[in-house]
Length: 447
Image (tube, rainbow, N blue to C red; front, side, top):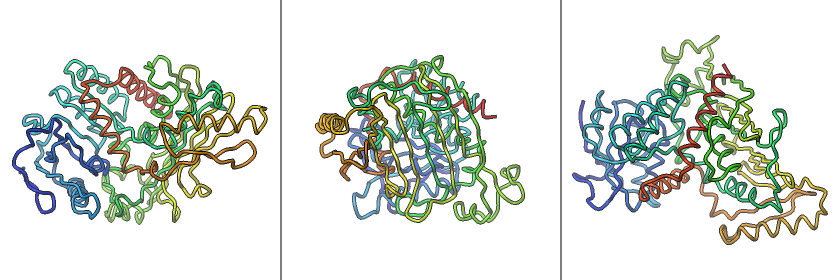
């Protein structure tokens, strides 16, 4: 075991700034999201960040990413890392407590335990999704929320999709009754809300080919797709359909659920991990020389009478020029609000308003114009254009399309605002519990 003060592009510092109220500690970083929290600096966050981890490629990749942020030509950061390496990294962090915020983004098998241990020690937690990947984890998570409340610390998960502009505008337009009407209830076969997300194992992050840890392909460590990316989609459904309302698991029923694998060859596995073969712990998932990763899931559920469907799929690699995609439809009694992100949209999310009433086309366009005008004070520059009969495209200035990586800074800024206030909004914790209760019911039903 050893403690390192990391320089060579990271800067040097012996003490924390006495003026910065928030000091970060990164625990066992294993996912690139841990670094994205530090893609930019924050006014009241100490530039000295303490990292506690075992030695390995996960740690090395994390340090490389921070170094790239520190040495880039535009908006370079000035993070100064103090790194402790050793098998007792968790106990060491809890004993030393050089910070007051724990950042968690890595192997999900131990994440819920880390959250619980951190709040028991009086530390705030900013955690990447998912915060729980099994029903047993969910029980620990509920315990962690109770302890956090008792110890007056905050637990918050990184819901980046709330900061994607088309999702924001979809939510805003749902509150415009003249345009949207009322949210339909739908049926199990024809839900009122459908959200579909397609991701890719091989991708570029911060301008470089992403190297994923081998454990990422073990659902016992990463979590199945039905409890992983689905976290974002369930969160969006709750956030859009019931804005700032506290939900309860008793108001939710999962009706159907299924799971299926993505097959990866050894060559594909090597491309994204650098490993020449599947590790021993993945051999149980190898059939006829191909690794089967249960990264895909779909489920239909009912929340406060509203039927919704969630669909998550992982492919190996996107077509040239493409990337991760998001599809979302919310059905109102006067219009449907639809986000598409396919080839026709140049693989960038675009929000459409689709009229479903018998209203005159010209009259409804005036309704669209009024709704957009009301949002322009809040989002200057947005507009609309007619795409086809009864269909209008919401036009969004490029300045709002900051990209997925920048959303991590927006989430962190939001969390810092809550830390300054000393509390989360009253609905956040009940809705996090309801969200994970939904995922766990889908997980059990899919099996």
